[in-house]
Image (cartoon, rainbow, N blue to C red; front, side, top):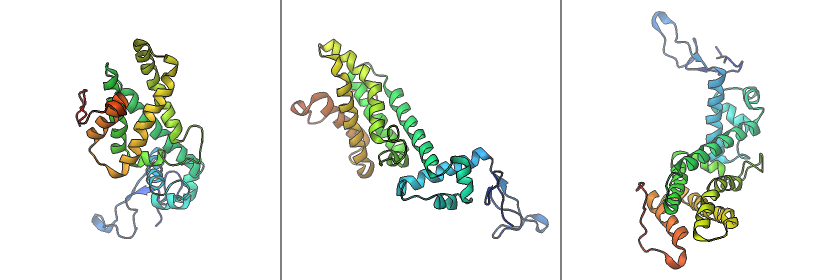
Length: 236
């Protein structure tokens, strides 16, 4: 017997249907019935499947057929929930963008500018550790929503959130605050691109990467510390 989901698709149940192959029989010779997914549960499942495939193969290398197959549904179910591969991809990218931006914004709590740099570096590296697939998707070229779904736009969004901090610091030091946006882009770009490299190598350890990033940003090449230390509460 074929499983029918609440969204009308084949394979829409979780577990086994009565009479299905490979399902242990219940008492009295009856087989256990599958618990059907709700529409919201199906949507989340498709997002999880699509996210994993996009991270592994990229947008172009992933097909609706494969997404449906991995989820155990028919192709029309994917179109019903997202209108196609593009719609699913756009939702995945939007979620990852919001997660990373929230992590960076909430991390910026320190009072000393150097500690703020440490917090921003840790926030990005934390995200890479916790959401490796998501970061792989963000750093790929996006065929959808070119102005908002790209790695460059992500860097720009984060930089916008930290440029006001640099602006205040520039005023206190007698520098031109109009240059703060440019420096914000440079600093965030340096951390983000280093994070992209660290994504695969994972060496040195996260805290050491953060310390050296801040060392370069804070001291410059001419004043590099041979053994940089972290001044904030984060040490790992």
